[in-house]
Length: 248
Image 1 (cartoon, helix red, strand yellow):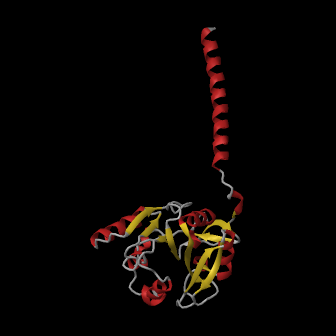
Image 2 (cartoon, one colour; image 1 turned 135 degrees about the horizontal axis):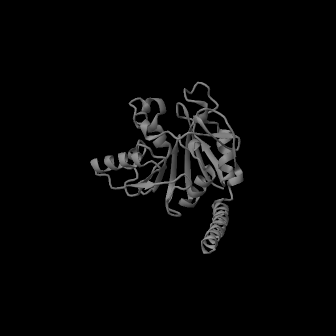
């Protein structure tokens, strides 16, 4: 009888434990939900996409660190006219600038000498990219570049910390564009600017996969939803939009 009672008691506890575990699990899942959960939709699409959609745009796969040689390709200046892009930013010596999705640091180390008394924040989510920039920073004794490990939902920068934000061909790859731009808005100072650089989706002659391009109309719609307005689209780059957004 004692043995049978012990087994029965044990089974009751197991049942009770499983009930509590299920309750906690459901509660935990509910707590993890964010107000933006219903903004995204999920369905199959382009092989280059992740099957997640925002405002009828499918989000593209992130380019991994394996593509670092492509970022540093010798003909990038000719194809994208990076020098002109940097001039478009009108960088001042005291500017604090964030390069979101900085990758290999291609733009970071071109901006750093211009923002000589400011700081250039090189933000990336991939450790390998950050390690590459760290080596380059050390090798060239660059003092005004700060490496920042971002996440898929935040740039991890202090509030009101930057004057300008640069995104070069990365916005369309954000898993959580709403959350990312919200975090940038907090980091950007009152009169700050976002420079959104994307391959022109309106131009079929731009030799990039459609999912890795954006139209001005789509970009304006998404940024407007985040509380930004288009100040200007400088059309002097060979393949890309150079859209400047400011807080509304």
